[in-house]
Length: 93
Image (cartoon, rainbow, N blue to C red; front, side):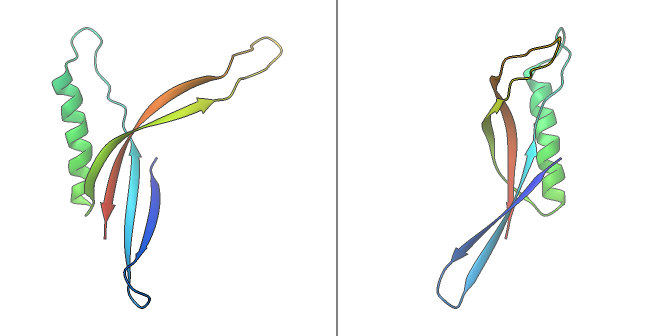
């Protein structure tokens, strides 16, 4: 899943540049016993290269804090909580 965001920046009243952004969730997956930070870096590098092959420029890795609402049910009440998600931001003109 990814999201597109379009930013319009006016240079003059008659000329407009449009910058398009794509935001992709990034969750590395490694073995808890044998996984290394190199494996995480390789997964991020693969994602960046996939974006680049589609004409996207890597901008940054962004941490987005999200509040997950509580679940209230007959047998299962879960309190709300805050979590962070990592998003890779790409752009192209």
